[in-house]
Image (cartoon, rainbow, N blue to C red; front, side, top):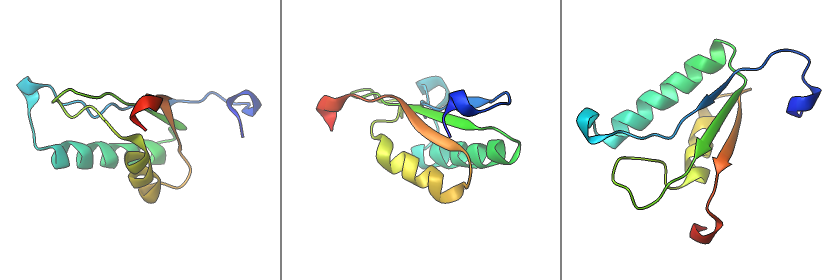
Length: 91
């Protein structure tokens, strides 16, 4: 179902998995906590999640969206996961 076909208000999330140096945590912890939050958001009624990608930066910003999206969809059932920015040259 496309966004235009929905008749109710939809809520979405934006996750970049960024962890700036001042809040530095192990990346597996950051990603795990965000995955948990997305599962919670789906249960709370969130409809949509968007994932941007970024390269050549050392703060955890998501560099490869397909495995991240796959990990999210393995833990959720109805939230729509999509990309908001993909750099084709890196794929």
